[in-house]
Length: 302
Ligand code: GUN
Image 1: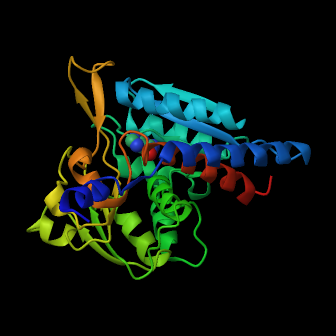
Image 2 (image 1 turned 30 degrees about the horizontal axis):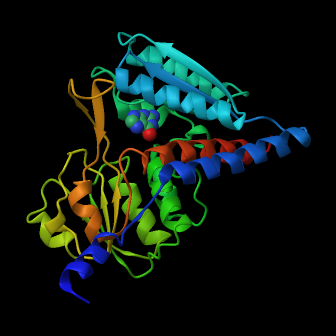
């Protein structure tokens, strides 16, 4: 084969991991479960969403979550508070939702205003209603024999790998970003459930490319658009881009565009599988949230 045509073949060889499609499949499965529950006289899952302040991005995310609840036939409620609410007052509201027998699962949309401690608020959520999987109890349950409610975004990434039949056992996985919400729990899930060899890189990692170049599966979860360039990726690697940064500019239709951590155009031709942004991991976070809400409802035996 001539070199040029070989290059052309190589350039076309990657497959797109379609998070929108998988998320639609999962929503269909959930909505069938809701119908079966109704037929059996069981409770319809109820998700409550707490939103503090009027951050535009948070509002958009919450709108997507409400829309998803409607799609699968869940009940939902929205609790909105001004960004001046005190931490104590918010804690009291969380207590109420914890005790509300009709609510099966709830989330507190992040970020919170600076005067409120995310850690204190998160830990106030009843673990069996913590459908984001943010509490220490649920984080810890990743390494237990009986996981409770798994962190939603990492759960979504694992589900994408499974549904695309991408093997993880014995693979070199490099996770860039060690955040409490994504990088850290995902690394543990890749070890525990995925049986992978995992390297966690973070902002103090020296020579990041040295690590990423050895990855069979490279996961970027930093929030720095364009951080991962082609020379940092091994030929044939699987690349999962969890980064979703809103970049503002007059050239974009809504005034902003969502950018991943991976320079998609440059990196994609080197990969075997890659997630786009948007339409990759993003929709899976919501699918996982719905799956967790269904599971929380089942766990409560209602
Ligand atoms: N803010 C950005 N992503 C998330 C998420 O998955 N859950 C919550 N609660 N807040 C977020």
